Image 1 (cartoon, rainbow, N blue to C red):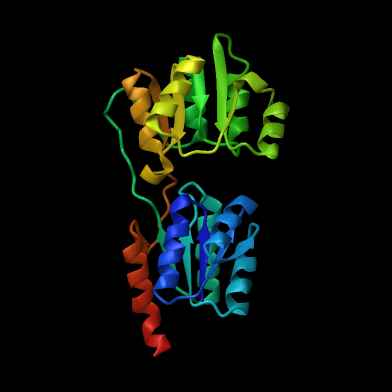
Image 2: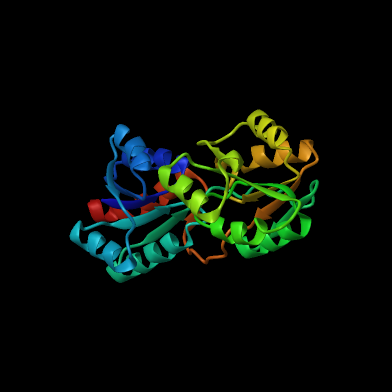
Amino acid sequence: MILMLCGTSDARELALRIREAGHEVLATVVTDNAARSLEEAGIAVRVGRLTAPEMAELIRGRRMEAVVDASHPFAEEAHRNAMAAAKEAGVPYIRYERENVSFEGQGSVIYVDDYAQAAEAAAAKRGVIMLTTGSKTLQIFAEKLLPLPDTRLVARMLPRKDNMEKCEELGIEQKNIVAMQGPFSKELNKALYSQFGVTLMITKESGKVGAVDEKLEAAMEMGIETIVIGRPQIEFGTMFSDYAGVVGQLDEWLRPQQR
């Protein structure tokens, strides 16, 4: 059995490919919504965050043969926990990560290393700022940008109750919340930028499947400046950006054991 961390839309397809190759899969996800998508495809799912020791215990208890980490590119804690758990349990670890989409040097695109740098850069520019980085780090931007004059912070995030409560706690008004589930087309991005009169957009480099290119292309075509937060720099070891690579590596590692 393979333990698979699923945190992106393409993780579901990868789980299906791994199962089709003859490997049993147990997916672990954070939300019930993500679990439903996998369950509908017939993939066994465990919901809830796991610490490294908890994950190692699960690997040993279920006699897992490998860990496939297909969590979100910015799920740094999940990556480190998965690598530590695999090492502790004595099983191989594979990282699947969607390819980078770089727009550096094109239009008014600024790349920064982290959320704090993004907030600092946005504070220097001001204007109407659309934040598309989710709710987890919303506080960093709210504390930096909300007190500024001539600045409006528009937060775009998933339509979940906890997200709305977080916005209320941080002082983000309802009129400045876009609660929708993506990915968004370039046309819809343009419509939202136009509706709010956006002058600056902030996003994460989550890859093509994460619809970063649609956000950026829409912004560039409209002359809107963009701040892109680069991915965390982690040494994963065995890593692939394609499904076939992951499946092939699993076959290479596990087939001899199954003969």
